[in-house]
Image (cartoon, rainbow, N blue to C red; front, side, top):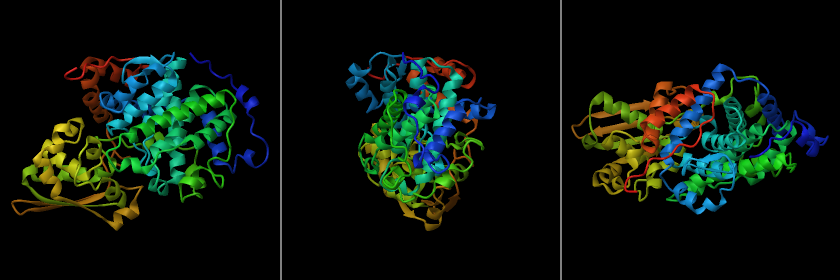
Length: 477
């Protein structure tokens, strides 16, 4: 088990020097570090604690949805000899390990099935890297549940604000959950380690130079996308552990002329806007999107629109003659895939997801059973779906993510819906009961109904950290 750093000791060994690096009013990295250190000393309000519990419940739902899927299942076996000693839990195999091993595997697992949460305005999934790292550190150090929740809140805040500073142009070449997730993980683990502001600054500086993840990995059949997020969690843990040992970083790593923002974004002058109200307004963890579907969220508005039309007009998939979607540019760029060959591609195909919704009734885990990929009815319906860019919707992105849908039925009816936002976004949030239902649906097949209910009750109400939970045998095992 690791020992926590004594408050102030790391600051002596890695002190921020006076001068430009030390001007905390101008340096966003230092402002974020100051916030993180100060926030750790304050109690969570009941409202913020509730937001944090919602995020952790959703993370576990996404985690259990991915526990039986590659690449985590491949890597849990391949990396078994590197688990080391520790008290952190790798949920993909239910075994204890050191915190970096658990954070890596849990982050991969919780991002694989595409059910993990979103910070809409930053185009970033904070839960998978941040909660994976925070929980691994909290379990390994045996810290209190409220300290863990506080680390999650702080990690979300720092990561989401960095996302605001570099998006949307960052998304052109980079996978934000891979890059920005490194900062969320580093901050959360620094909070669990009780590092002071100086050490947190050096952890963030190291995180900046270890962040990575190319957008190209999202465009094909690659399994690298969830591995991006595992790397973010692991690299964030490493950055925090390094800072706790006195390792220093380049303190202008965020906004320097050749720093993170300059290297990965056209939006290098947005720090004042991104950090406005830091520490004095409701935390951004209260502005998180929770998914209703297990696929890329750029498809969600169109899925919501078609689901509403189907409910109102009482038709089925076989009744559809053609379907036209107009959406913001990122939807077409990422999700216009009229032909798919793998489950990974299907999760990022608007055509497949709409066909699954119409033919199977939903876009949850069952919709991506491999047998459906070659279903002739799916392929036929996919060929009837077209996707176009709508400039008006593109101009509203990323703060609003809508779709306009026109649908022709074989009986001659033409149905239309303009969907201004996505269900689950902050302006159309999932209720607590809906979040609980999502958890039950995704967790029960993996761990059983009774263990799922017990864990759900713990996450809503209890004060102790969750421990290992055995997975049920997979079919055919």
